[in-house]
Length: 152
Image (cartoon, rainbow, N blue to C red; front, side, top):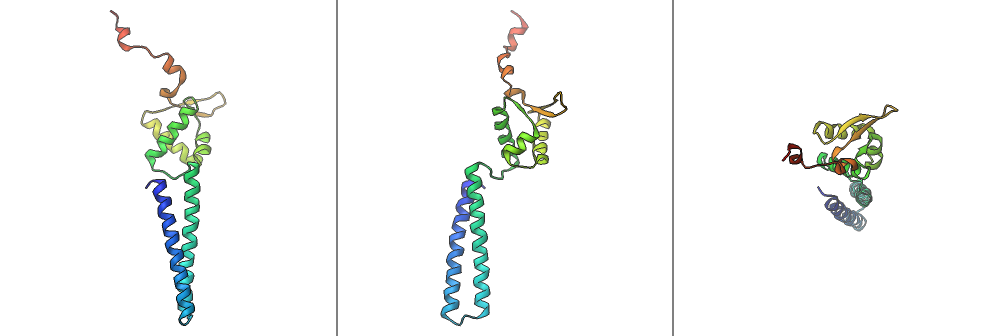
């Protein structure tokens, strides 16, 4: 589900539950104000509060680009980040930028390695660096026509 649609649905459900809560309170006050009507009003009130909280989180996340995405979309987000990082990325950078845990970032990056989109290199300090060859600046500059190598 897209972030915009999720936000819209959450906003609509918040309004619906708020109206239902008000209706339940009015019915409870107008009629007999029994314990059952109060419990029902509190139940719908709790749902309205939960929906409002979810709406707030969803709206904030969609504005910040921090929306939980599907696996393929996570990969695309990591590729965009790698492009901004000149084709080199660590799991820590991915975790910070994408607001996910380091282990999640590492798993997603390992998926990209398994798909052939990236390689793993080890820095002088021992850190694992995920290298996306297609995004390296010097790779594009050194590209040559493969037919030129065959000769005239």
